[in-house]
Length: 350
Image (tube, rainbow, N blue to C red):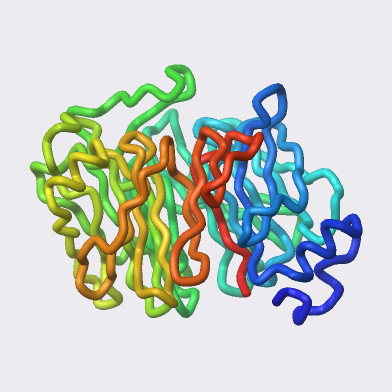
């Protein structure tokens, strides 16, 4: 339980919130819309009990805890430019920093292994170039540099075990704020998974799908403890064409596509909205808000072991032997809430 971590994490929270966290086996966070005027980020327990809500300046997308689990950074949804830093031990308003004027966030980021740096996927939109922004987490999240993502439209990223390399999901989608979220290059898009050496920031490997799959925008990642990275894609072409929507990159660098049966591919309607790994259960989940399903897959056999039908399901994070799931229609842990949940759930590190 979190109480074993000591009282420092609970300092500054209201008594009810502190008590809920003290008795929780795990703490999660997700962005939301309250249905009226406010976007925010909520902390909740593994039972779906909302502990505290923080108001954001706009719609959030994904979040990331620092390695200590105290600070949480939430990124604006593309093409937003804000990121909010939350001290989860307190109820203070988030502090906010922004992408440079000629960049915007893609909604995802990761801390370095030591927590000193924050990496964020960004769009150098005037040059149609993906970059990873580098922010100093020890100095107010001051931006101190950037490096090429290895492609266009970097979305999700993971820092691999050991902290020396990063895998980038370059979705291949060229966009520009002047055109909102419109994709400008569907006919020529070329998504990839790029391996980056974080010391030199060099691209050391590029994994691409076969040419006939070039309209599969690789977007979201989930990583196992040993460094296998599972990915989910979104078909920018004919969603009725049953292309593989998921796969994995092993620690030795080999890419493998997940051979899902056609019946499940039809259900997913060409779209995976999030990916999460459960170490304890040996499974990975792929959610599809378009298809209203979440598929749990055994990582060893690569067979579907559960199919959850939930309208607009997207958020997913490991819990016990399964997954905590949320939807944009307010469902959390199978129960209706008053909040419309955004696409991702993040679990606080143990």
